[in-house]
Image 1 (cartoon, rainbow, N blue to C red):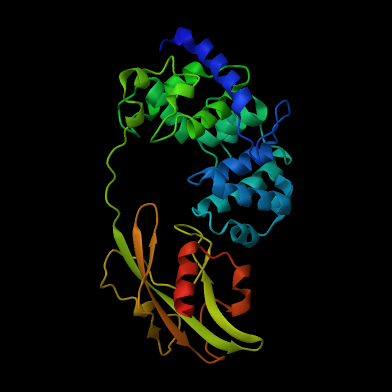
Image 2: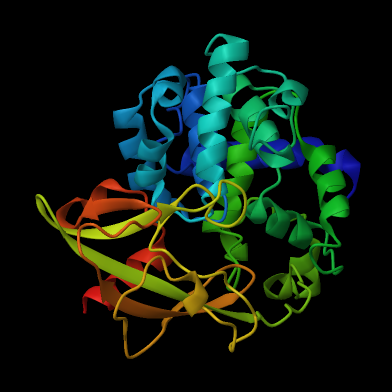
Length: 351
């Protein structure tokens, strides 16, 4: 492919998109202007998450908080609770921060400028470009995982990811049109999601098959190449399920994790630090003196960069015992933002 083909690539892809575009809850219908709030919200949710998973979350968020001002005014705990299950909770905290900045500094309207968007909390190069292109039709280049795969095959780029990212961005920029940039960005995403798929690309129906260098070389299914992943280390810890008889019924102790770090700001069953030493002393982090009973099997949860084995123990104290945290009625646990690993610990503790 040479740069002189850029115009044909643009026209062929946009013509394909006009016929085959996906219908998504955050996507404006043909001929209508996209809502910047919806674009931003969906793009933050879609990071490291599938479209199928995000649809329900997006619709619930938009129903509960129809505008960025509504989201900014919401308590962070409510946002974290609605986010529970999507993972990568720093995204939810930055979502709330960003909503407040948009309201306080930009009058509740997302800026159209890509450079200004980059200054907002939780918005990086990809998200800024996506909002600028899709919501404001700016000539921004949008590169997500789908686009990386499409460009890698189009240009037969054999350098493994992530080392190939700069080259992929250069080629993506070279073919991004000045007009209909938002449609072009979404067309690239749709092409990667529905035709140029990871394992079995449907080259026979691809609008770019004529220009695809990987198809010509017979290596389309092998690209993009990726560096071998390092094995995930295992970390170990203890979780303490502590109950008491409260005035209105049985209660359990929860506490909030530090704002910074993994699962920052989320509620948890009190737990010890997570360390790579399986013999580390977790008992010294028990929230109170109690007769503790161990659950038979540890809870196992896999994060992006490590695997966690969490020993769960159960205990009970009298109503007068002082412990750091908040006592929550068992029938009100659903009101709190609990990450998946903690819901696993709760299930194990309650048998």
